[in-house]
Image (spheres, rainbow, N blue to C red):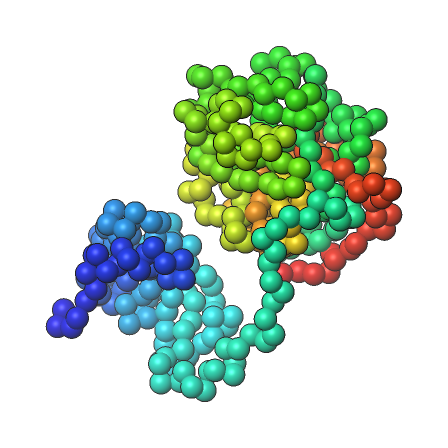
Length: 380
């Protein structure tokens, strides 16, 4: 190309650094205005394929050569599955927030970097994200609208699970227990209407019995989040059907584990929303459905919740990251989506009865916040 280039080995070293993102910049560095459909396929799809094969990482972003593109080029980038694309116009330079869409994010040229310093500074540093855990805070309800989708969250207290002897509504299952708030939990067998058989291994302090998953089923849930709860911590690890189907092996992951289950999919990890490919072969993963979820917020507190309106899983992860989740996983959703607080169901329909609940126990002497913390006007 007449100029120095990075070697594949140098790129592999860069790809290991979490502060560096590798993006596609086409195969032949052709200006993408006026290219034929076959040329566009090569510049977008083949570039992504080569980079992913050589680096072993997902390539989610595209940068248009010379910043130029037309509608067919944008549509080719979108069809290839890129999350976003970068452009630049020397005659009409724009900040990212002034861009037309995620597939045409504007950039500022190098000649204007100095004048952009004050604009680029985003203000005071955000509060640090706690990497510890807080299981002694008061329980509170939070109503919030994010990206035009309303949510109900309940945060605080100590996390527990209940593996019920049959199926029931969440408010019925947590009645006469210390649990003050609960959400429907992991996937369960639909073969019998009163079965409490779960998909994958289950361990609940409600009865203290580890129940392994069926050997014929558990290979299909590999890499889904295995949630491990202890008295003072929570751990999320990718489920391995050859490793995590015995109590001894999950104790090796978290020695004082009291509860364990396999969730539906990863929504937020280390504060970052997860892409579509992270959900694997999960059925109807990105269809608009009511969704249930639970995780740990930035203060290290357990937090459960539901979407009041249907939402896709990818958009759900984006919303939960904005809501302040440090880690979050999706639970059994759709018709099973349930949330109860202080003996009352908080969803506007009668959900499908479930045998598994993730609950919150308040600190001693705390009955939970009596007022609703409403932030419904906070639209991100």
